[in-house]
Image 1 (tube, rainbow, N blue to C red):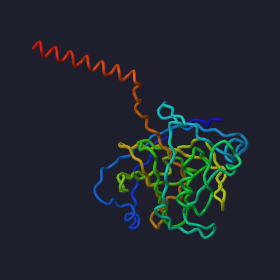
Image 2: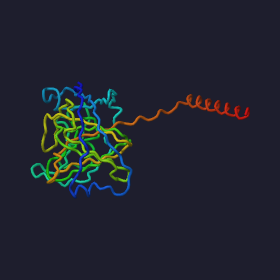
Image 3: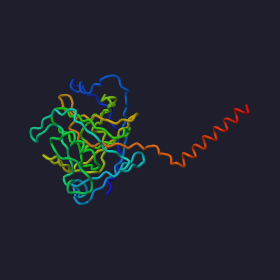
Image 4: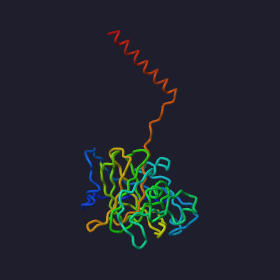
Length: 291
């Protein structure tokens, strides 16, 4: 069953990180070509198995599979999207005394393991980098990187198998901010954009997420897209909670558009192309001889 389509509103401007710690972590270490981000709106097509009812009996407690997105009237199927292929925790210095672990957790649908509709990742409050990758490396919208609201910083680097310039972000509850930075092959920050909580637009898709030590039920996903002016293969995703900043613990999923490769000519096409080039060369030689 498909989620209702929603148009999204205006997006927030780039935010600035003002603490000495954040500046030290995010500093660009040497000259690098700058990449600019711009935000765009997109619609979501999703479905469920129907085995597990959630809020309003429709979404939430089972798998919620992303089937495709639409941007400006152009539809992209799941086969045209790519999920995260790598993830690495850069920093997690939070402490959750009540539930254990730091600021990161990995979540999945409450009944995801029993629901055959879509694959899922780990559910844990003490995730490794591999656990966070598993939460993102699928099309199950219940699979999220969960950032808790403790004082501290949570930074995750993610990579895609094929560099692209189009990214799709979901945030559970659309009530948190997320700093998105482009990284080059040397790991340098070459572009930044802060997605503000007011930028996300409701999707109509509700999810209930099991994080092993706690469950968050029936929250709607918000969505926003980012486009870069150059292809990017790695992103740094950051959340902060300090005396000056409160990103409010973003719980997110990110996917990317898979670039369309140029078609490889068939042997017959090569033959026609070579014949055409030969004809052009013949005409050029005749003209020189006539001159």
